[in-house]
Amino acid sequence: MSRGKLKRFAENATRGNIIEPGKPKFGSIKGRWQEHFQNDNELVLEIACGRGEYTVGLARLFPKRNHIGIDVKGDRIWKGSGIALEEGLTNVAFLRTHILELESFFRSGEVSEIWITFPDPRPRDRDEKRRVTHDRYMDIYKALVRSGGWIRLKTDNTGLFDYTLEVLRQRSDISDLEYTYDLYHSELKPECYGIRTRYEQKFGAEGHDIKYLKFRFKG
Image 1 (tube, rainbow, N blue to C red):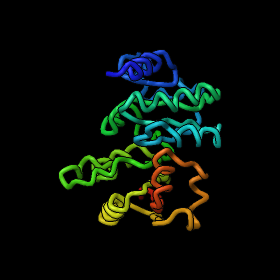
Image 2: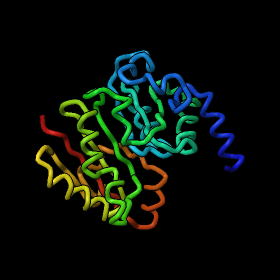
Image 3: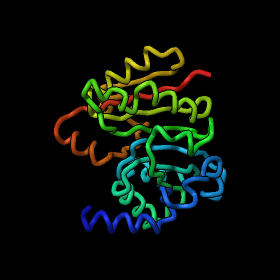
Image 4: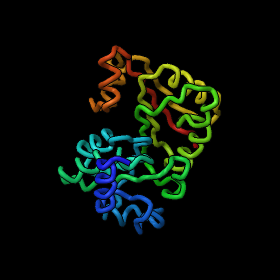
């Protein structure tokens, strides 16, 4: 492991806005997010958040909501965590865990909204179950999000986007699905608040159109 990574991991261990293995809250935070944030504001998740651009960006725009970035890589969330601390964003937290473990950290219906921003597309057929819009992940999101809560996806990858639409169309519990293959020439553009992740900037500069969809679960 590089010296830089070791330094970042050491800093993560001291940061109160990162919940990760080895910290007391990691095993006891489920149902206690209000205690962590010291308020009862709604929770918004960013799945596979990387550096947490949406977590931090939304926290700036919506200070009356609590924003939690989820990623298994500690060296990634170190960046967003540091920005949140520098800016005094007390409505930001990062949770270092696998997405498949999310039900260990949130109660049913505890989350108001979920963003999935530029996830790894996992293009190989053998990796289908690892795509974060596979049915097994959708079932987790359904369990966590409250009635009427939106699930949103942004990606540059057409294959993942098509796959996700197919998954949603095959389910019987999806409502209010809207989507575009070209976000920045779409009426849906304002919903993304002009926040651009590092990957979005990279792929956008290469000429890739940005895809976006949103939907809710029935019931």
